[in-house]
Each structure stands twice: as C-alpha cells, then as structure tokens.
Length: 298
Ligand code: ATP
Image (cartoon, rainbow, N blue to C red; front, side, top):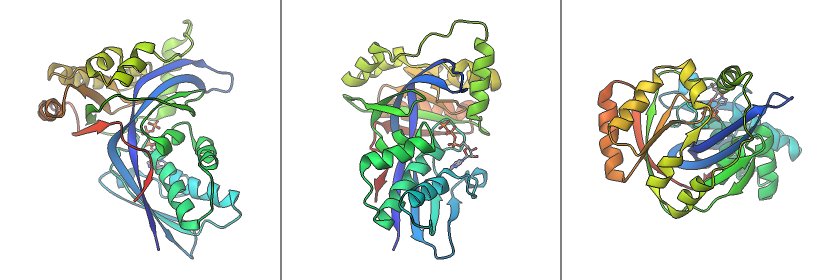
C-alpha cells in the first residue's frame, strides 16, 4: 500500500520584507500564488525505518538525510501521534532546487499529507497546518495552494480570491541561491536605512481578484530582488530578455535565482519562453499557469 501526493511550486507576486527582528527573522507581507510545476511524494511502509529517495534532473542536489523537509514532516507527524516514522518517502522532483519556488516546503507539505493518509492518523486540517508552520514559513502555503497572503514570518495565511488564470514563464538558472544568504544580503543593503513595515498592496490584491494580468504586472514587487541581483548579477540579463520578449511583468521568484515572467495569454507565454530559451540567459524555461490547488492525494 502506498500514497502519492502531488504538490505545486509557488511564486511570490508580492514579497514585502520588513527590517530584521531581534530574533533574526523578518516580518513579511507575502502574496503567494501556486503554479503548475509539481513534485510528487510517495509514502510506502518501510519496516527498516525512515528512508528518503529522490528522482528528477536536480535529484543530486536534494539531501536524503533527516534534514530533508519531507523526512522532518514524517518525523513531526509520527512524534505527534506516538508512532515510529517507518516510511519510505520517494520524491519525484520537478520543482527547481534552491530556486525560490519553495520546492523543499512543497515536499514537506506533501510528505505530511501522504503519511497522514498512510497512517490514518485522523489529524484535522488545523492540526496539519500547525505542523506545517512548525516545519517552515512556506510550508502551510504548499498545503493550501491557490493564492494567499502570508504575514508574520509568512506562515500566517489568509486565502485570497483570484478572478482568473495567470500565465507564466519561469527561467531556471544554473545553481541555487541560499534563502538565508539572500536575507543577509537584504540586511546588508538596507543597513542604516528606514525599512518600512511590510503591507500587502491593495492594487495588487484587486488585480488578483479581478484576474487582470496587466494590472498584476504593474504591481509585481519583490523586496528581495535587489539582494538576489547583488549576489547573482547575471539575473538582470534574464529579466531584461524576458521583458524585451514581451512579458507584461518580470521579477525574481522569492529568493531566486529562478525568474518569473507574467504573460498576457498561454500563447504569449509559449512565444516568450522560446525567445528566452534562445537568449542564452538561463538554464531552461518552463511555461505554466496559476493558481492551482495545494497538496493533493492522487
Ligand atoms: P524557498 O522558496 O522556500 O526559499 P527554495 O525553493 O529556494 O526555497 P528549496 O528547493 O526548498 O529552496 O531548497 C533549499 C535547500 O533546502 C536545499 O538546498 C536543500 O539543501 C534543502 N532541502 C531540504 N529538503 C529539501 C527537499 N525536499 N527538496 C529540496 N531541497 C531540500
């Protein structure tokens, strides 16, 4: 018997970052949109104890020990329900690793849901979301999907209405960027300046609610973008190439180095992807759309 859960990547259409708090975390106003790039996590009983395997083009960069968020999710659920995490978790990975698309968080949410179904723990949705929040700031959104505003460290979620489908091209970069390193660079770049309180943009929420891609493009903002560009200057060339190819809007996805291009239609996205791909400014491109549902048992 095994359970497979499919889980989407995310893009932050707004990522507003406040000053570093005394505990080192930053308050955020984080508007998440789940997009159709997916990992699948399969949980199978493993009498020999917890084991993680991974397949896919980036599999070599995924840790297979207890630091893997899928393993941590299984251990957290097992601890809460007083059982041993005797499970084999296989991750079929399509979300870029360390790409700013919450791939690890996605696997955490997927493993939690898969183990919950396999073990029939009877955990409630709020129980599962509480474990997600303990695992990491982006994990609750991977469970919920759709679109949501995250506040606090990003883990307190308010689901958002979306009035249409948005079409995206994602440009994958060579290598990853460490999220903590990008936040440290944000702190360095903003040192001595007044960092405003992070608040969600009313214009951006309206654009989402109305499904208006042009209005959304005009309001896309990522406060981590200067830090990501400072650590990876070549991303400026990727952003420029996508904009020149006709994207309505372009931004670094989360902490990068994946870049995201909002397009007017599915056909426009295909065309922009082709141009970007030929531009030599990225490793590969992916065309997709959102919002899509969160972690789902297949
Ligand atoms: P975010 O957008 O949430 O900041 P990210 O997409 O930039 O995250 P991840 O792909 O989640 O980055 O990976 C970040 C690091 O987490 C990896 O370099 C890896 O060491 C570790 N990691 C732990 N579990 C996983 C997992 N299941 N998949 C990928 N990376 C994982």
